[in-house]
Image (cartoon, rainbow, N blue to C red; front, side, top):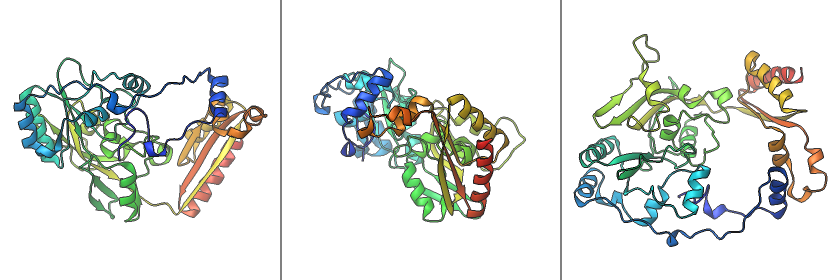
Length: 363
């Protein structure tokens, strides 16, 4: 299943905003909805692929002819990410950054072969996971042809050690698939960013992803024990030693590199047992400053929850507004700021941390 090419999410689940919600956005944020029929994908004019026959043959030798895609739809779906500028440009039909081809490798050696072919034929290479980048990570350097490397076929859990509580995952594995595979053996990764439904393990590593539960489980880079990186000069394997006193940590060079140094082909991470108990609750504060002070105390002195999120006044109002109540006192009833606090773990540990957090938040 592919994401909507001109927006976010599954096109089969798209629903129009109610008039009351668009009215709320207009009143609060000054957003004026503009009636505009979106372009159809088949109406876009896609430039011819600049891939010459020799380069095409070399790439086909690396991944197989059926996994070198140059059709217009596939190239459009791999153009840029999902930031507001990215979406505005593609909705206007701007395809100046469309890849020359999309490649689908199945294993590490395929990626190494692709990189060698790209180096030989002067092609840039952009790794593509879930396509959820909002910081320009999928935008190529202008001036030369490039190909997109779609890692969706590299989607396996290749190793799980229940004693050490580690798992090795391929980069194209989407987060929900990873959680399902780990849950079958009683474990969780515990990483749930807003892009969770579509993002991939390789993308988490390449962007130093942070998620909704990072207060408790840690950021993704804190979970990573080792990485395998395919580069134009060969393979870098950072090793699995838990700690080292020797030199710089090469993992930190790769994490957050957005594909600048190579393509991540395997990630070994720490995993946790699936929690017995999950408790989530909302806390309301009179102002954002008051809420910030309370959450700061909790973050500094503990006990630290698994999830800790504070919305400002505007986000709280929009999030709590009932569409059928807009314009009928909803603003007054939703005053203040909402904090979402969640605890996961054993029943005993969850109860202890919940009580401790409540005491801090009430102070």
